[in-house]
Image (cartoon, rainbow, N blue to C red; front, side):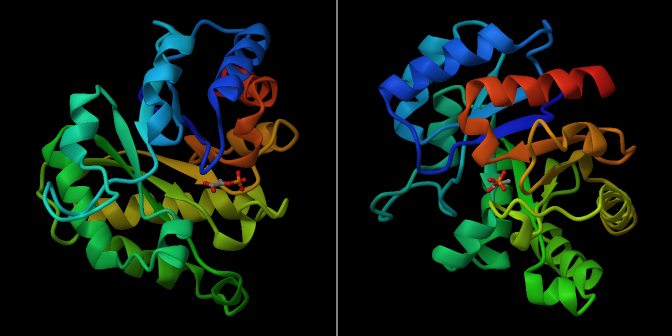
Length: 249
Ligand code: PEP
């Protein structure tokens, strides 16, 4: 199964954290299917994470790549470097990047192209703000974000989309699972109808996923998996979410 459960550790972690996380995760994970799981640690720790998870099959990815391949971009990491290190995926356009680093849909589009050129699976993050949600603009906002991000992509590109309502991230609030399901269906329909040659591997949900709400989410047909921030920082909690996923998907 392709990537379906991604841990986004954001700006968290340390050598000690990584060791503890792996110990807690493997103690509590009750299945042998690790192929659908990915971890996006802070890039500095990729090598260490690889040592602590061994050859378990968990994929390692990054939280961001630069929108150019190389050159004068102090502090950045390129898709080529990610590929060089054997990383399999990159989050692209996370709302925190859009908000704190002013990432535009145009920049995101360039990152998607570079990820595809380097066989790094892009996980395109899209989502509406609280105000847009209150105005019932969710579908229009998502369609716009998809159009802008995908319009310059080569026909044969592949990607994963993560639907992450900005107001649900880290807030403990999530939309009703049926609503999420219908948004995911809409996302699949839009990509299929406007970009029929693009291979959309799956649509993940992200925003306050926990072991408590996981079964109500994974019971939905079009919720193919999850992108998990806060709850993924606890190896035991993340293992419990993965156990629910393996029961239902
Ligand atoms: C995220 O930031 O991608 C995310 C889903 O965060 P959280 O699970 O903490 O809401």
